[in-house]
Amino acid sequence: MVIKRDIEPVVRAAAASFPVVTVTGPRQSGKSTLCRHLFSDRPYVSLEPPDTRSFASEDTRGFLAGYPDGAVIDEVQRVPELASYLQSLVDDDPTPGRWIITGSQNLTLLDSVNQSLAGRTAILNLLPLTRNEIVRFGSATDNLEAALLAGGYPRIYDQGLDPSTWLASYVATYVERDVRTVSNIGDLVAFQRFVELCAGRTGQLLNYSGIAADAGVSQPTAKAWLSVLETSFLAFRLPSHHANIRKRLTKMSKLHFYDSGLVCWLLAIRTPEQLRIHPLRGAIFESWMTSEIAKHRANRGEAAGLSHYRDSGGLEADVVVEGAGSLALVEAKSGRTVTRDALGSLGRVRQLLESDQRSVATSLVYGGDDSMRRSETEVVSWLDLADRSWVLE
Image (cartoon, rainbow, N blue to C red; front, top):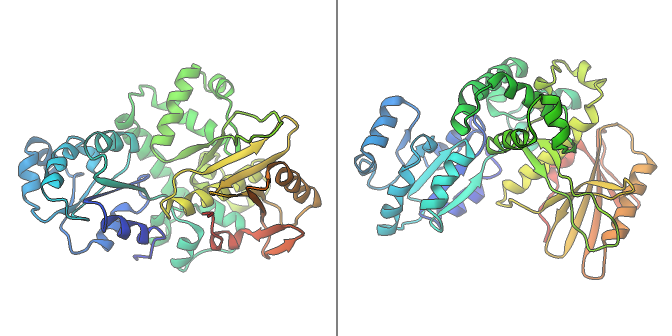
């Protein structure tokens, strides 16, 4: 089943302006399906089969000559040098949207693209499904724990698969195959343990020395391995907000995973009942909310502009969304009721950050079913989060 992806207008706009459009993202996020659907008038070729990959690598000019009017080329990171040959082709014929290239393993792909196609390609990130996209499959659950457990990888919904079974295969493929391609990691067992430890720290401040000690590796190794998770679009660091106020702010980033289902699988959470009473339920919900906002912005071509606020007194806002002249502070609370303390904390951060030149709005996203307004804060049900715009003017 092919559903409309939120990023489609941005991809179409890029294809109308750039001779090459690069769509990257985690494995199994739907890149191939999206591009084949949007550009069905172009030939499609995947560099995954060994014989095709060998042809493209050994005779790149001959391979590309087979597509005089352009093509959709999938898994392009398998032949990194192909981008260099595309450079001369698009310089000779810069027709917009002629070449659509896709691939995972972001570092491998972007190194070759940035070196050869700078200024010639738009680079867009397709992340796992947003809540709105899941609803389009017609099988979205209104149970919060079940939704967090399922996550947002398309194949789970397209084929009606059990999330735990599919994610087990996904992790095995990622660790045993993709990690070797992205980085020279010798001890895959230790790396998988590191990934599980990171999952246990989702939604929390990132302490490299602590996670390195728990994983039994050096701090430089922990940093390098975390970069692998970011390169693979499994996790991301949410930087601290820097404000021109007389407050001592934490400089530590927060660690988040893009997919709540993957976090649950890594933490051996297999049922909604287990998640309901799990001590990390609140942190998993916060990461889900943060990733929903990040995906919403990525689907509109916005890559930056997110941070978190925390000062030395413990006052915090889980997400700070930055616009040209405004900010939005967003707090996550997984409970089904809204407390006055949570609203009060957001209000205090708003008072610290607002100024004559910048307005500050506050939102609290919670695990209940009804959205409402409480004083100056918009209280947003998790069911309605995807309906809000998180791209500010």
